[in-house]
Length: 421
Figure 1 (tube, rainbow, N blue to C red):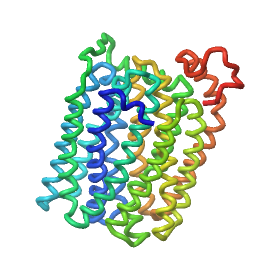
Figure 2 (cartoon, rainbow, N blue to C red):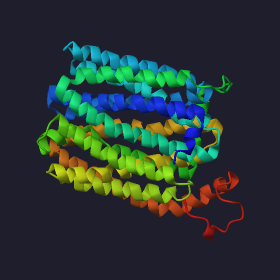
Figure 3 (cartoon, rainbow, N blue to C red):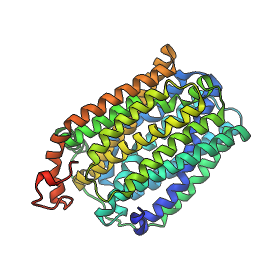
Figure 4 (cartoon, rainbow, N blue to C red):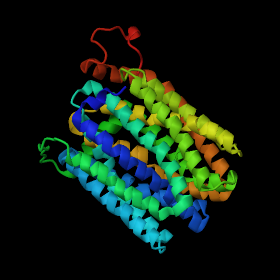
């Protein structure tokens, strides 16, 4: 389960990120709670989510080319320093008692611009930290475990800190936590070699787009991921409204809900970490999307805390398995020279489409209510999972030669004996 940690650079990255991501989740819950406390508006929760992630949809294609051209290590150093400064700005304004929703929106946009470069660089850098390609799926799964572990700890700490000291100290702790990941990046031994290209940026962007769109497996998994992120993930943005208006709780309730979802996500990530092969992940993607959607639909009908806390682990687990499995398949089949661009499209599908969903969810929730908004998103995810399941045989036929070439399926094994993707 921990075999990827034998690689020094990955071990450093894992330890530094584990600390930093706890701070990130503390800031996420504090930002949502602060906006809802200042405005009481589900619509503004959606707008804040939109501003924080829309830059990824716009800038990720450019960032992907830069990730393929520049040092991914240096890009990550720059994004972490800038993220630390962004959290520090939030902390100073909140502790001074002068922060406004407008300032939050501006700082969210800034963080979104940073993330549009950070996410594809982070994903593409994994393979540079893990020398043995056979350990790549485990490294991706451990990344997911790290994210979800922090997602359990962070909101719980954040809920307590908000209730005891206010949102400002949450932002300050996040700013300090970035020191850990910056130190881990500086301690790494990385090659200074970087790819040189005489091709124009627009031509390289076009090459990346053609690969993603023309190759059915990449196109299909990314379309399902975009659907789930757009229709399903806005439930996270609406969670403060669920905690206060539906479950009649406060910041502690919000922390419990986020933690419950994180527990399910951690279980899903640990399941992926125990897998020895990428075989079977296609089926896992389809089933996880359907489980995620069904969990959301039932969660939307709950009006009691204990039932919501039982349902959210199903939601979190389904989403984690679907997104991490998509990441693993893409990292396994993508050509190395296109890795940054493909992972930029992954970032667009995962994060870039979410702001559209957040904005739409905020508007719809303002009209028909939060429960029905979440319910409709869940039904859409179930439908997407079913369609993906029906296309699995064709996708498997196209991926099989790549798996054979890379030794994942031994050459000459009859199709009937090879586990479907």
